[in-house]
Length: 450
Image (tube, rainbow, N blue to C red; front, side, top):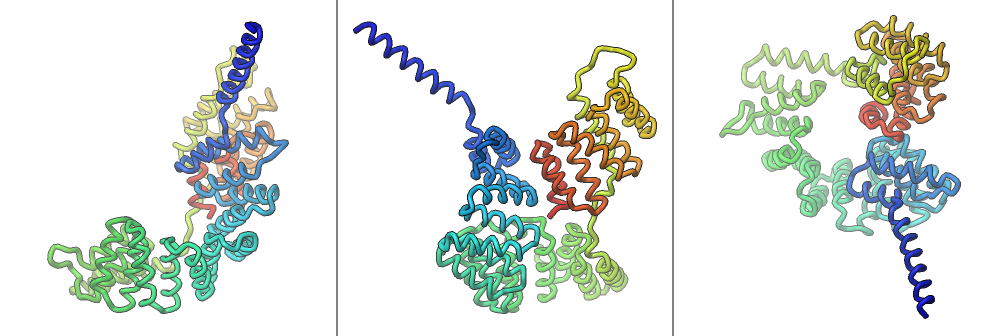
């Protein structure tokens, strides 16, 4: 009897140790999902990548879907599409992945392709309100306002208290000239969520179109209080004030002039604001100032669609950050006169001092001594880029990536240079850099890839 109890005790200890061992191993999928829910998308992405790599022989569509979700929220829409592609390949009935991929295409203004995904999601699940809502957004972007209205109606049948659906239906009514009808939708959206500035802006615009300038102003004031950096709200607030003959400001409130000036401060390319300020200056007798603003409006209008891109020559701060990042990962080797590291480090020091050509000589020597020196290829590529040799800089970054497929910084720099050369595959490089943990890539993606 005593022996049986001892055996049972040993078995219990054995099973307990297994449980503890299992508990000790992190569940990267669950951890990533929790981080997605709390908005920690960069860490979530890393955990999903670990989970995917661990299960490369038996891939899980849920891992790819959730990593795509993280990339979407980091504004890496190209990268997100690749993950949603894989999720759908593994699970062709994954309607959520069709919706998410459609939304990613929509964020790239590829609404016709997005519509195909929404249609498939609706076929798979005709009771999913989000699919109708998202398809309605794409129809609106394609100028199909009646189609958008129809989809928003269906979405709201399935989810009547969805504030974005109500606001979007209001927007479709505005596009169709039904300003009074739109007010009901905006009113209800604001009741459900009174902290969304754009709902007040939209309602204000409908009131403006109905000639209700005083009440429109109240809504623009509320929108500005909730989101004080929207140049459009200041412009339309100024417009309402011109209709009420309030140019300078009265009773302690700002006038149209101040609103137009604030709009221009927030967006120096805001042509309408220059025109509005010129009009206001003319009304108060400042004809010289009015002429200046009208002239500025005309000049700015010619450049309104100008887009600032990286020119491939990165700032000194960025270059130093990249060099320091590389050197931080390298431990000092034992001294010998022919070691590649000596030339590599001397080249980096020369580059920091501004002597890129001399730095190149040292990187060349380092590579001749160690032809698989990924860091030397990378920094030689950075030096070439600084000297304007972008094509060969790309090749050096590519060599670094061949030697180290997880070289995030090399993907990052190659991506920037490609964008400078109008090669949009640079966005895929930036996506890969972000996936590998180089978070600055997402700022460039947000600015130049969508």
